Length: 287
Image (cartoon, rainbow, N blue to C red; front, side, top):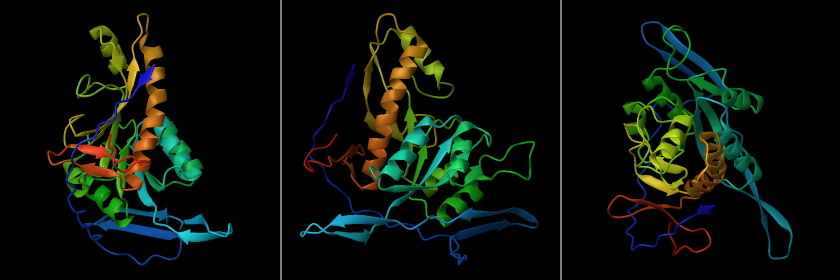
């Protein structure tokens, strides 16, 4: 059983902060974007497929169709495993429920299922952090920030990424990095609590409800401002595997809904720093 709670509050919305100018504007050939990072020796070089342009079909009053160019948000997703949430977000982008475009997949495991899915769908894959035993592969924090900026990334989405996000990235993308956690934060979060460990902890505690939490990312594990949650009832004879399956089902729905909201600029910040989502159907409602 799933339950959701809507909240309405008196809000004050600050002006949208200006976007940062890319560090070093590039002039690549059509459909290709190149990056080079150099110190005293060549450190990193790569080529990435440039994001394709998108159009939207709009119905005219007379019933005919016309195409209107729209600006889709550019998304980078970070994964460490199979990437089921990543796949659902990608499907939403392709299907039109999410006005975004997945331009990069970042992983600490270059052969994981999420990375394989990205490659099979033409999404460039980056390795971060740089593996300790493979000095020629992967990015440093500074290089990662540079690539994301040069590629015009609007939002970073963590979807089962198990590494701590470096301070350099948090500072470069304030209020633009989201993570999904398989429990109702602030409970059952923090370093070492991920995957099946979370569900075992929930059952051991006797909690009657669990469910996914989407929150903004700060420099610690699972402590950023909560943006959205969905409650999943814990039943008396639950196992960690059964609970995990039901929570994951809610994750897939909730993350796509939230990503759709950020791409449509429906995230509003209360005076006390709490983020809320503006209803698409009724702009006076927030949750």
